[in-house]
Length: 185
Image (tube, rainbow, N blue to C red; front, side, top):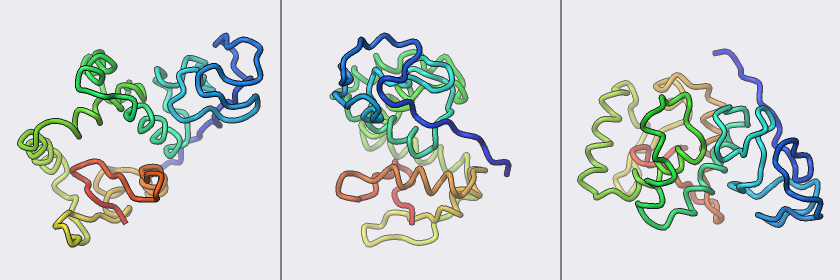
């Protein structure tokens, strides 16, 4: 599998198109000049196209950074309407042109639909990827997957899968893996 080149995130103060004023701290996330923005900051600029990173289609950041941005945006949603309004255009685009905000909205909806709908999503996922088999089952009865299992079944680089899984840890180091991939080890 060919390796992709990634860009470094732009620290506050190095923006080219977003006019954030001349202060010493980001007016949105309050980081100091020269520091990386907080994940999900609306004022962070894409290092490639220079649009706000939350609304960018470039997918030019390291997978872990991209996942962390998406998860931070998802945490801002408080109800299904928030997610629907934020990701309203996502259904009109293909998966290659989704922004971090679109992905966050989709993740929020997937986690918050009624359980019977979640089961339908899971069923559809495993129909799309029948070769993805769990390497173990945890004490809660949840399927556990290795990075190799996921990478092979989804046609992804194992290092990318590992980086994304690492980004899915919460503040306590607990993995927050989206269903239907309940666990990754």
